[in-house]
Image 1: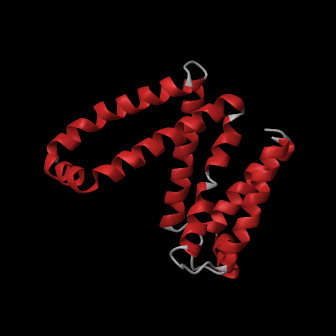
Image 2: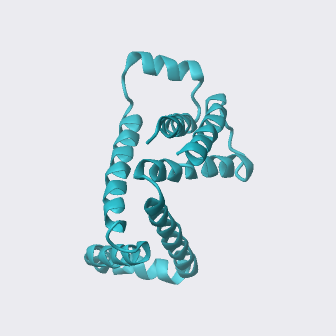
Image 3: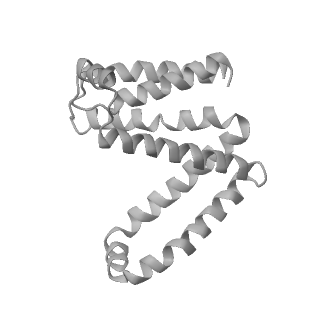
Length: 176
């Protein structure tokens, strides 16, 4: 990434980190950083970020050889074959979900397919660093959903994360 885009990615990461600090104060976050000790939750979050980075690079390589829609279909079919043995063993649970939540499962599947296909298409238009950072804006949407619809309390630290994340997105969008 260029300098402004790199700063944008850093700001997105910082914003996401702040949005993930439910219930913590800014001084508490600073104490944790000074101690340089990760909680198990923070460690798992970093591990998740590493995993996202790895599969984003793999996806970028995949869509550089195959159209994003074909790549997505291959991903779905591959997932079905990998997961089928597990789900066939627990067919009672699958049948119960199929009866009670079939419509929601189908809607969620279609939305997931469309959303991830758009991410794959975006990877063809820009570098993977920008596409991966922009995907994390979903955390902002989830935070706003929780605050507005579920009436969750949003701490000052989380509130600080919102403009930081948005500034990062703007830098990536304008200069990246």
